[in-house]
Image 1: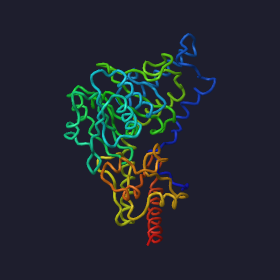
Image 2: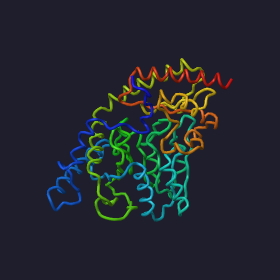
Image 3: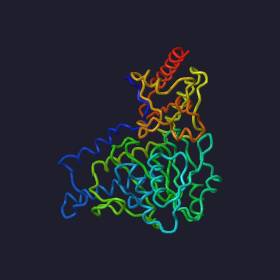
Image 4: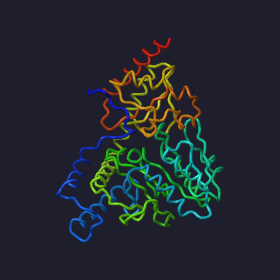
Length: 383
């Protein structure tokens, strides 16, 4: 077994070997080309390849390729969704979002709240769920868009998107969902869920970093504008599309869709094994967030031990996190964990453990024993 054992797959994933193999020809002379240069053979071939990739990317969420705008990642996709809607907004100047959105959604919404929009934040239960009846209280005829994350990036709780869509649409508003952690892990169909806009990213599902997507419903059309300016390579985004990354994203989506049922069951079984062993070995261990949650994600609360201390103690053995990688430089308590009612001390004692396709039973059992040993050692020091 190779150490340290990687337990941070919701931060990023390695490229699947098949994804690397699919991308490589587009980096070299064999298949390179600019999809926008359709006046010659290389460009036309590249354009056809790009359309094929977008079809695969859309298929993962039940959408056609024409509804997909490729971006640099989900952070840009979320910015494009909110800022692009705001640019076209007329009478509706209100944004409603859950208290557990990723900071690329919440920070963008807060920016808009300083530029003519009002912001309403919907609380969640102690288990980390938005309640439809509670959401209904916050949505009005002034609401432009409701933002509800598909599944929490920190505690994994899967949100009631279909009910949220009904509430938003009944008020004449749109529904945007950040599916960055959920895409490829659980079934998603934008038509069945009636979602208007949805964001996701390649590097969370064994694709390359640096490319993501924004789905925008085509019929009836969503009033959204571009926020960057330049060429007409994509309707909502200028700039040369990175063909190799698009190909890799498409292949990653194809693989994720094909293996979703098998991988999800395996991740759920591995998570259960990890949690059972942790609860046996660490009396008083808590779990943040209820079910249903994403397979492979556990957010645990250690008894009387600081999470930063245990990560340092086990740095040679385990790769773990206290939350989103995007917020790792911040020293303030996680707003997600605060939103479910945890004290600052409980937040400081919380660890996010995320498993991947290649996580083995040996690694899970080793991680449980290492964490238990680390907790015992640090508890003795503190006594």
